[in-house]
Amino acid sequence: MKRIFIFLLLSIDVVSYAQNIPMYVGTYTGEDSQGIYLYNFNTKTGELNNKKLAIETVNPSFLTFSKDKKFLYAVSESDQESSVSAYKINYSGSLTLINKVNSKGKGPCHVQLNKKGDKAVVSNYGGGNFAVFNINKNGSLQEAFQVIDHNIETKKAHAHSAKFLGTNLFVADLGRDFLAHYIEEKGDFTLKENYNMEVGAGPRHFEISKKGNYIYVINELNSTITTLKKAENSYKNIQNISTLSNDFSGESYCADIHLSKNEKFLYGSNRGENSIVVFKRNKKSGTLQKIQNISVNGDWPRNFTLSPNGKFLLVANKKSKNISVYKVNKKTGELSFLKSIKAPTPVCLLF
Image (cartoon, rainbow, N blue to C red; front, side, top):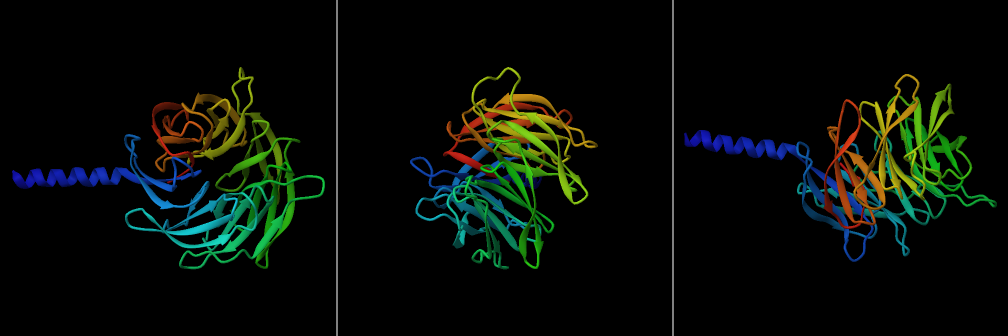
């Protein structure tokens, strides 16, 4: 009987451990924040707990993993030195700095790796450029081997995010209202085409469908999503749709965008309306239909993320300093609010 009791206790511990996964939180540092934080997230209940400081660093406002999740990369928006850092992820979840390199532009706000994990691209909002880096096998970053400046005499550029797709590289430029399409040739990236958004739209982030046939661009300044459809080796604009409720009349600025794993639904965040918008996606045509706007139960939702099992959506509310957790209805895509916890100026959530 005693052995059975011990076995049951051990089984409960194993199940509980399996349910809990790490979530890293990038922040703007100040009085209440010291760097990158680590939480345990329960994939069954949606509970967030056991907050720890993973590493002390300045303004780690965007984070991303290597493919094998052995390394984490973070930009640092610092007036003294704009940089991107590589960290080793320890067994405990804490982070150890491997190295730090200059981002080659002011205000780095986004970092992304290619599928192979041997290159990183950093978008410099303030500098209006982006830089591409080689990554060594030990996770360390080399100095940037290419820097491309989007600024022109008549208009200030604001590179806000970039993503690789095979040998393609796409860059959203909020200042110049386009999504730039680059092709890798002989190790460097050359411009193929710029896909223009509406004037003053302010493209910020974007999602690419798994097969690369559609790109969804969320526009910060006019609160819309632009759908681009692949046409031979180029992309064409097939839809612009508002992210706001029909009855909302105040100022609002879009931030983040994510596709569900099954690509049936698309989510976006609105700062001002302080909502998450939910779209149903037509998988044949790629077009979107708005089905919900739900309050973030906080102020200024910057980044948000879907849990790996797709059952939850979590929102980083910058100004109200909280993380809100939602249950996802996998059939309808709609969200229902579960809970909210206080958090130190959260601006990026990473599973």
